[in-house]
Image (cartoon, rainbow, N blue to C red; front, side):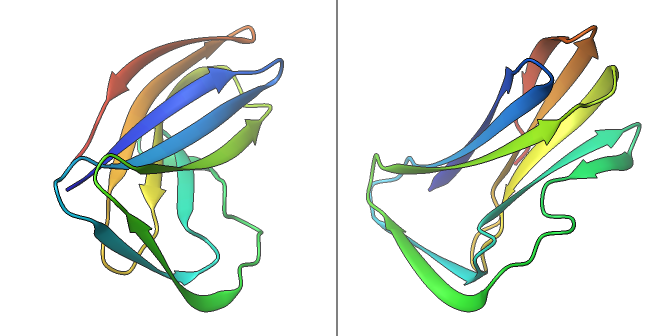
Length: 122
């Protein structure tokens, strides 16, 4: 059983996002990817997309597999540069053929500072 956790760390003028995918089950889990894009991150303002990590990037198209044994995890990171002040729903999603885990967090940005409240979506 895979579980997703999103963490957000404020930088000087950016937000550092980390999506962790953990195997909380008792058996190993195979994860299959269709490209080098293994995760994606998006920020929404009242349901409108204002930022997406993968936008404008190119990814190699090739099948790739990863195995997570029980208790193991993998992490994916992105940086959102210069977000405007406001309140956003930030979501990190595993981009795999056979799993669709994601985690979401509300992030409020005021004058370079952030206040977070964690909400995990299944």
